[in-house]
Amino acid sequence: MTAPTLPGLTPDTPPSTDLPDTVAPAAGSRAARLALPMSRQVLTEMAAEYGVCLRPVTLRRTDLHTGLTEVIDLPCGSTREDKCQPCAKRARRLRQTQIREGWHRADEPNPTGPNPATEAQRELVMLRAHLEFAREEAQRSGQFDQIPAIDQAIAEVEAATAAKGMRGQIAPGHDEDDTGARRTRSTRRRQDAPDLPRKKVEPRTLGRVYVAPDGTQHRPSMWLSLTLGSYGRVLPDGTPVDPASYDYRRAAWDAVHFARLLDRFWQNLRRCVGWNVQYAGCVEPQRRLAPHAHFAIRGTIPRAVLRQVAAATYHQVWWPPADQPRYTLDRPPVWDNDQTAWVDPDTGEALPSWADALDLIDTDPDAHPAHVVRFGTQIHAEGVTPGTVHAQRTIGYITKYITKSAADCHKTETDRQRDHLDRLWQELRITPCNERCANWLLYGIQPKKAHGRLQAGRCKGKVHQRATLGIGGRRILVSRDWSGKTLADHRADARAWVRNLLGVTTGATDAEPVDQDAAPAYAWELARPDDADVPPLQHRLLRALSQRAQWKAALLAARDKAAQGASPLTVPGSVDQEGRA
Image 1: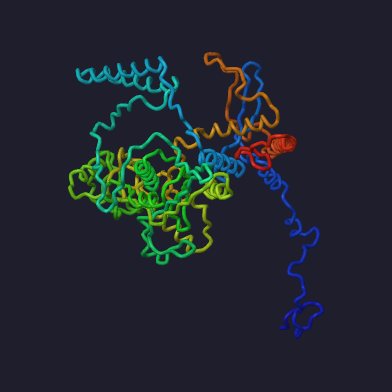
Image 2: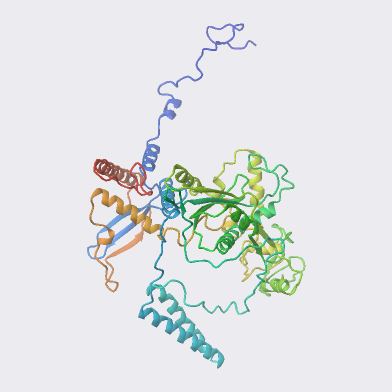
């Protein structure tokens, strides 16, 4: 059989190298139609470009006086790019503004402290004191039938604290399920941890001021990176050289308790330097999938002190031993309704309760913590001068991954990376996350407040999810006295700047106060996408896109007009260069 040849070529003639690499598809063919852009995709891309929420929350507002209904779209407020990119970018700009305003402050964010208590607040505390006294008297005299009513009154008083303008609880409640004595551990430092100097923490958050020879003053700050230790040698792609010797168990336990280690670090640092150090940063995974953190620190601290505090910081997990599971996922303990406890599937013997397991630790003089979390030796710290390109670049570096889930920060492109992620996740699935975690059943212990609905290996905690990589708490960490503002305050500042630029004199704060005792004027309910009065999503995106385009045009025109004036405007970080708030 003769091989087919191209027209104009003989079998002995090599094909020409001048032929085009790609040939344009013929008009009207399927390939030509697939090359045309999708109209709905173009709409989605333009909406994202103008900052329109792609997954709005649709609410129906009904005027109770006229009966008129109106469908209103609200932004979803997602902080993840894979869910809604415009909302996630807006949240990232807001966090960058928060870091920028608190990083190089020259004044205290909260100089006056809390306001003095009002007479109504003091009366509320006195009422709480009388109820606590009455409860103690009822318990001492054996009138236990009066205790539930007193507890109900105490709960009502505690709930009224927020309404009266007070923060927190006056006193902890009386938990009937936790009648045992509080367990305490020795605060003596470990012998293998270096000691730290301890100073009285001054009530200030500002760092040192440096004076140059010409008399100018400088108040620089720092950024810091904290990393966990090594679990085995890894390749440049983050995968272990020898997966069999890589310590996945310690990696999983360190990731679960990394947040507590960070809290202990800031406590030790403040006690070591003697002032209330403020920070703002983000927790993210390294390429090897171990968590580490980047922080902006107000003020300067010697690098030697930072390394000393990091080396001396640790967190001990005083839990029952959990070195090796006693049961497997395919044959876990079973629930016995007669004993109301989890029992061994072979012998039927009840597993030790959580309290019994802790009692064994308390009575054993040679007991050791189940796990100890420490930082690694890689501690990176740099000084940052305010108003420089380095400062702006560092803020972007700190917040580069806050809109992604932990597992999406680094792409898994090879089989080695996928296997490494799968091994870590399999270890996280069976790692206990708290006292009530169902995974304690695998280690032969009934978790605290155990019930028959527990499923070992299927705890609903965030640390067990594949997308979190063990980082179950908040990934964005900001100290209390960082900027003196909440995220709502920063949003209000951005809106106020836009209103001032456009010359709008009225805002949400100018509305008439609403009488709390008056009947509500509107009724709100969540609208379903298939409701008759809810337009299709594409129609709503088109209207929102048009509105955003008009806002942008008006804002850019106002900025150009203001730029021609005498005084330049300062644009807050939550409004980008294209005029998107």
